[in-house]
Length: 85
Image (tube, rainbow, N blue to C red; front, side):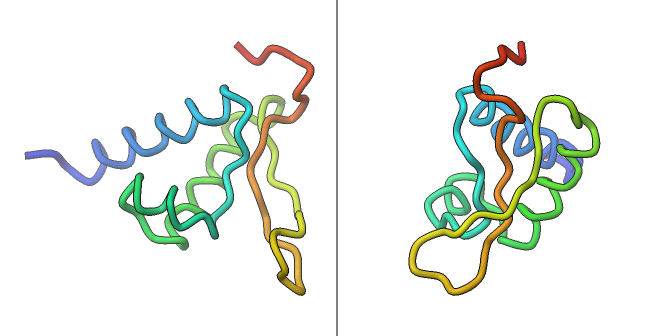
């Protein structure tokens, strides 16, 4: 039986794999939320934690997504031209 800490570790690892592959992480991405089996609020919290742990590799920034009237915070690689590994 896996604990909540084990599940969080696996989810954060999956997010980091996507980031290393230069994908942006958006908390409104329903497909991603289903894949990770977490809620939007949880993803937002994990995004903030990843940014604090790896401030020179990843950053949260506001971006207009879709036809929304207000910006959404997304997590992405700090510098797409720099190899973060």
